[in-house]
Length: 247
Image (cartoon, rainbow, N blue to C red; front, side):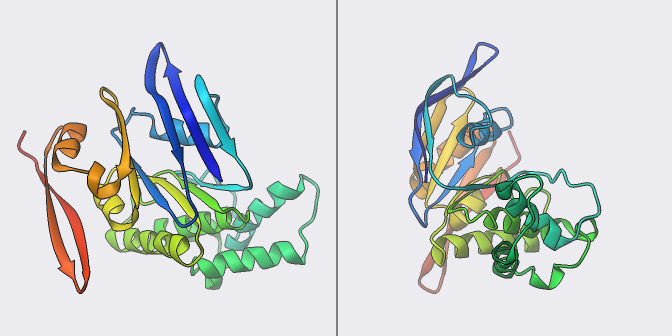
């Protein structure tokens, strides 16, 4: 469980946001959108307890898995070893992993479809494969909440679809709570129950995705003309964003 009550963050005498309250229910997906500098990564760091808020309270219970934008892993670890780092962090610096730990690693790799990559060098993987491994590492903490900072950044469209499909399955079948940031509103339309818009000038807006991500709100947020288009696939209605690059 993770919950923020009336939090605010101030940097260089400027408030990024104030009086922000949010909580995540099991099986819920919340997308965070906003231009660079609006405070998306700062919000995640505050929720994780990595930086203090200027006002309000953040409550956490249980493990919270975190997937950063970029991996800091530079040594030649195998995929299994990277995922096992999550278990080592829980046990302590000089503790060895037991059978339960390696079972958690195997389950996390199986969940993300990366079991066949367990012995491969992490550095030799593609960007999409690395992202799946980092999600597996977060799952190996036994977290019921995942926070992902732009999980589809720099990925090809097919890899974006794989990551978004995995996140949808995790909220559906596994009832995990997921909070992720993106610069692409289509990602929010695809999988997010609710969305949070962070605007450098107009504060924030939080609510159901289709209510929050309107043409007017997105056009203002990104300073481009945005049009939304609905299309039907069977019984499901999908929404996509169209951009006019004429200012």
